Structure formats: C-alpha cells, structure tokens
Image (cartoon, rainbow, N blue to C red):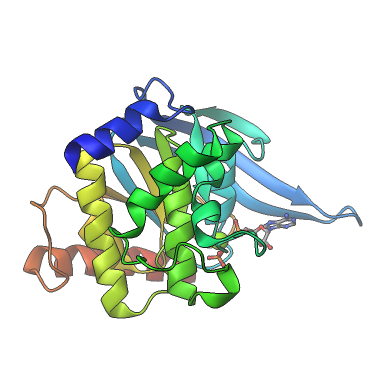
Amino acid sequence: MTTELQARAEESPAQGDGGGGILLRGVARAYRGRGGASVQALADVSLQAESGELVAVVGPSGCGKSTLLELICGLQSPDRGLLESPPAVLMAQRDLLLPWLSALDNAALSLRVARVPRPEARRRAASLFGELGLDGFQQARPSELSGGMRQRVAFMRTLLSGKPVLCLDEPFGALDALTRAEMQEWLEGTLAREPRTVLLVTHDVEEAIVLADRVIVLSPRPGRVIEELEIGLERPRGRTDGEVVALRERALQALQIGRIR
Ligand SMILES: Nc1ncnc2c1ncn2[C@@H]1O[C@H](COP(=O)(O)OP(=O)(O)OP(=O)(O)O)[C@@H](O)[C@H]1O
Ligand SMILES: [Mg+2]
C-alpha cells in the first residue's frame, strides 16, 4: 500500500516541489456587486501552514471560509495583503462531478486534465475505489450515487491531482456520522503515508480538533482570525478524550465571543 501511494505521488504530473507552506499576511477580499454594493468577505487575515501540516478552519456561515480556500488555490486574487502558497487544489463545497461521466472517469479527471493517457488515469483512479468503500461503483453515474459516495469520488479526484496543497471545503459535510468517522480515519492514514499540506474547512469543531495540527477560528463576516489553537495531541484522537473536549470548549467559546462582539 505504501509503495502504491508513494508511486502515485511520484507519478503525479501536477506535483509541485512538495516543500514550502502557506503564508497569508493581512489578506482582504471583497465582492463587488453589479449595483456597486460591496460585501467584505475577509478582512486582514493572517495565517500560516507549515509544509505537511493539517490546519483546520472553522467559523460561522458566510465568514469567508470558501473565499479563503479559493484565494489559496489562485481561483481569486486578494484585494490586499500577501499570499504565498505552493500549487493548491480545491475540493469544492459542492461535489461538482460531471453528470455524464462515470464515477471512475470523474475520479480520473484531474489526471486527464494533466494529460495522463486514459487507461493509465483509470488504472490509478481505480486503485482508490476499494480504499474508499466504493468497489463496484466505478461505472455508476453521479446520479446513481448517494451524497456521501459523490463526496468520496470528488475527494479521490482532489487527491489524484498530486498537488502539494489540498484545500478541502467541508469534505465530509454530506456524510452520515459512521461514514464520516471512517473517512476521517482514511484521511489520517492517507496523509500519514502521503503527506500533503492540508487546509480543512469544517463546521464541525470536534472534527477540526480530532484531525488538525492547528485550528484557526474566524470571526463572523468580515472574517478575521480570532483564535488559533495548537493541537499537540497524540494521534489517533477520540472525540470524547478529555483534552479534545477541553479544546472544543475553547474553540466554541471563541466562536460565541466572536458572534456577540
Ligand atoms: N461570487 C460571489 N459574489 C458575491 N458575493 C459572494 C460571492 N461568493 C461569496 N460571496 C459572499 O461573501 C461572503 C463569504 O462567502 P463564503 O462563501 O466565502 O462564506 P463561507 O464561510 O464559506 O460560508 P458557508 O459556511 O455558508 O459555506 C458571503 O457573504 C457571500 O454572500
Ligand atoms: Mg463555504
């Protein structure tokens, strides 16, 4: 398994240098509507993710979390501030699968975009189906898959892009509790074998603490960093571990204070 994943990482055409983390200093981003009205999504965001680190971002709905990931992936540009990141791939909040392609071809899409020949792209994508509990669904169209299955196909596509930074926007949001726990375990195992720098947006504070090296708490819009928690706990972590519960309380308190400020 290790060799298979390592081989996939080495084969990945879009792989960057694998080094270097993410750095944001004083980043701001506003959306301007046609009528001239402006929505300040992010204001003065500064954060850092070291190479190979998993940083979770939590914050109230509309505080600019998806905007933040799009900035890091270069899909938008900041209005102000400094942003440095190695090549980054986005797993969008909605799964964005192509309805006319099979699950296998959807998963292989990032390899095809990088001009990997179809048989090779399919072979590499197919090797992940078993690991994600999707064996037998390679030929299914997205409309024949459950929300959680679609999410997993989108996750495979993200991973197969081979980019050193993964920006995951609520990747497990559509999953039931059991599948969610399985996927979290799978993500931990995958990252242990094939390290990437990960920015994980989640509304689940416990999930953030169980998975992340560091948790960033954003204020309501315009989003700014109001708390940063170092999670120096051994892995694997359980949701009911005393330290996890204590850190969860701190994060929830920061969210609460941010809301009434
Ligand atoms: N393309 C856009 N055009 C105009 N406004 C936008 C656009 N995208 C986002 N916004 C606005 O920017 C703000 C931040 O949006 P964003 O999607 O980044 O929030 P979020 O934290 O990801 O929210 P959620 O948790 O609900 O996904 C919101 O007020 C939203 O209405
Ligand atoms: Mg969002």
